[in-house]
Amino acid sequence: MNTLAEENYLKSIYHLSLNSQSVSTNQLAALLNTKAASVTDMLKKLADKQLINYARYQGVSLSAAGEKIALQIVRKHRLWEYFLVEKLNFKWDEVHEMAEEMEHISSMELVNRLDKFMNFPKYDPHGDPIPDSDGNFKAHELKPIGTIEVGGSGIISGVRDHSAGFLQYLEKQQLTIGKKIKVTEINEYDNSMILQADDKKIHISREVANNLLIVI
Amino acid sequence: MNTLAEENYLKSIYHLSLNSQSVSTNQLAALLNTKAASVTDMLKKLADKQLINYARYQGVSLSAAGEKIALQIVRKHRLWEYFLVEKLNFKWDEVHEMAEEMEHISSMELVNRLDKFMNFPKYDPHGDPIPDSDGNFKAHELKPIGTIEVGGSGIISGVRDHSAGFLQYLEKQQLTIGKKIKVTEINEYDNSMILQADDKKIHISREVANNLLIVI
DNA sequence: TAATAAATTTAGACAAGTCTAAATTTTTAA
DNA sequence: TTAAAAATTTAGACTTGTCTAAATTTATTA
Image (cartoon, rainbow over all chains, first blue to last red; front, top):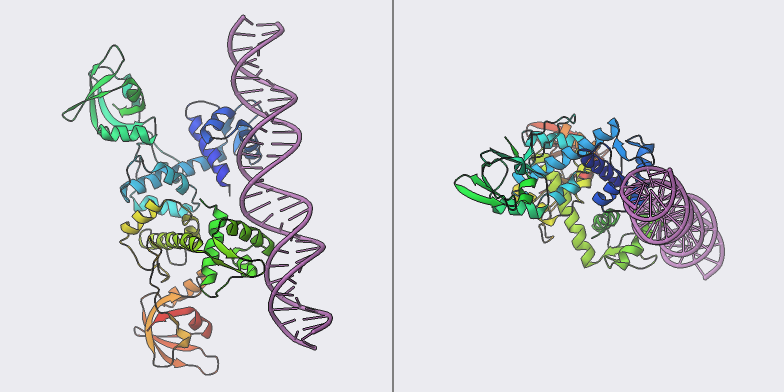
């Protein structure tokens, strides 16, 4: 088995790999809130274990074995988040830290039974896809609302920023997963947008528009 | 907050304190599967933190602060065991190791909501009492079946040995929590006992009788 | 109650994971 | 295309929790 630290590194490499081919030491240091030197040390260890592809100064990517482990951790994280929201009635901005601990509970049998208990959910409370026990999942075809033109519409299906602050803001504006919205106006000056949702008009900044994802 | 190792020491001291006033270094080393020297090191650390009462060579006991923490860990362990058995359909002999990990999830709010979700259970799947959020609990008045005389009866309400092997044996004999039994015969030679349970006669050894607890 | 045994602690070492400071490599840009 | 900047790695140190071996204290018993 792998240590807590190793699991967190694999997970972080996985997340960063979604945006770029190869992940840098500094990117990892920033995400893991540690120093580049510490990252280098751990990368050597993970390379020895053949969980990553790593060459000095050249960045890092997950090996097949490493990705498999990372996907299991992501699966556990998202299933526990779903549990916390759907069964224990936490809000979507409250569950990340707890799931961060729970994702390291090792039993596969436990996570599979949890999955079944909740009827095999496909997406977590933030709209992120939940890998199945083989690590497979289907992501939504997501676009930031900011890329939509006036008249375009879609269903809110994910967020790019997972911070509690952003999630609380969305909740307050009633911009939550599943809501149908339509872009009715774009302000030329600051690129802010006005959305139609149910019978309300909601004004959002460009920054919010870039971090709120919809399926068309 | 306390480290994983510290939590495990506090929990172990708590469990050993139930049988004896003061806990010895060797007892802890045996229970924690470590060496006496390691235990001494940790006891110094816990004493510095005022979580235990410790004087060299004199054994150790929990301080009020230490007991409070230990009870929270026990609470979490037992609530998660209950969850695993009642919600995820694990057997009572399968849940200990998982709960051993889950008991370290830190959020109090989480454990309190879990408690509510399951309707505030008072006993875990092995009959052990679950402390409430203040650390209070009421234990059953338990007696080993081995202390009962012929003609005596009671309800199976706990076990002294929590090992999977013992639990599996009991399951097979249908000697599970809640079952009403009566002692119908005691064999003079080996002190084994014959119990009446439902319409069956069940023959158990003295060893089993000493580890199976009933409420009269 | 003295000497032997058992229990416990101390001393010194080690692995994991982290850090700072210095050295090296890569990238950027003049 | 080379000098400066940025990124990364190495070297050496520190903390936590553990270990073995030796020393010390307590308990046992002859």
